[in-house]
Image (cartoon, rainbow, N blue to C red):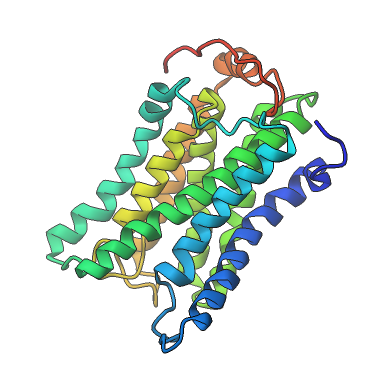
Length: 288
C-alpha cells in the first residue's frame, strides 16, 4: 500500500462516515449542477429523478472504484469477480424476503404500479444506492476495517458491527424530512448492513450484496407509495411500519451473525488474510 494515499483510511471509523456522506451530498451537488445547466428544465420537478440523483450516484460509485484501483496499481479487490459468485448470490438471496415484503402487501391491497416513467426511475433509483452503498460501505469501508483491525482480538465481528452501525446512522440525514420513519430506517438499515457485510466477509464477492440491495430498493419503488420497506406513507409511524422495521432488524441481524459464527472464523480469516490490494487469491470457502 502506498502510505501517502488515502490517509483517511487509516482511521476506519472516520472513513465509515465520510465516504457515504460524500456519495450522498456529492451526488446531490452534481445532480443540481446538471439540472441547472439544462435550459428550460423544471428544477422543482427534477428532484429525485434520474438526472438529479441516480446517474450522479452511479457515476460516483464508478469513480470510487477507479480511484481505488488507480491508487493501488489496479490491485484493490472490491470483489467484482467470478470467484465465489455463486455462494455470494446464494447467501444474499435471503434479501428476497424483503423484496416479497415490498411487493405482496401492495398487490394484496390493490395499490397501483408506478407509471412507465416511474418504473424507470424505480430501476435507476434502486441500482444507484445499491451500487454506491455496497462499493463504499462494504467494498471499501469493511475491507479497510478488516485490514486495519486485523491484529485485534476479534476483527471479524468488530469490523462487521462497526461498519454496519455507521451504515445505519448515516440514514439519520433523513431526519430533515421525517423523524419516526427515519429512526425505523436507521434500525433496519443497520440490520441489513450486518447481513450484507456478513455475505461479503464470507465470500469476498460483492456481486450478491449489490444485486440484492438493488433489487430490494427497486421493489420498494414500484408502487405508488412513499415508504421503501412497508409500502406505507412516511408521514406517520403506524404499528405495521414499526413491526416491519423491527422484524427486518432482528431477522437479518440474526442471519448475518450466523453467517460469521465462530465456526466460520478460520475460513473467513483465510479468505481475508491478505490486504484488499494484494494479488493473491485465497481458497474457495465452504458452503453455508
